[in-house]
Length: 158
Image (cartoon, rainbow, N blue to C red; front, side):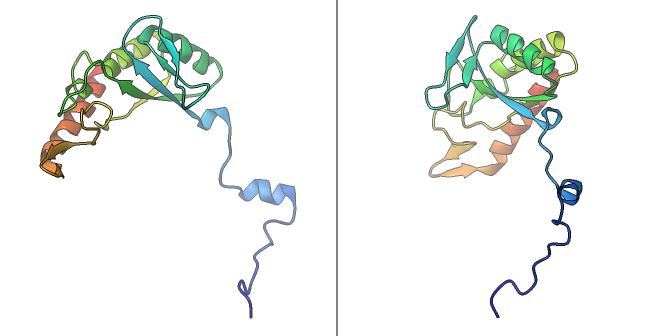
């Protein structure tokens, strides 16, 4: 006998049944809008590899998020673009880092919007890895300490 032996179609017979058992429902209330935050003022620079996606300064981010909230999208996720990179990704956990500033402004100016942050270090490090590099390897324990500092600084920002 050829695979599959049994085809379970009893829940696919009508649109009403398919709609009732469908797992994923795409509505604005389930979306998370990704945003890339950079230093500066009045910056809205399109990302060449992703048409329609922009690097936004904090002031432009606030404008964008007010529009997002108006569309009933409940959440954004922020990815930071640091001014300077180093081996330890220091801006990722700096109290005045780009994400910390963005979170603080969004919480003050777009109340009710869920703000998710990315704690990964790769964008902040000069080597592009998500952690502390020792020789040819990522050192897990020091990396975990920096990730914890990053998460804590984001929480403190708002």
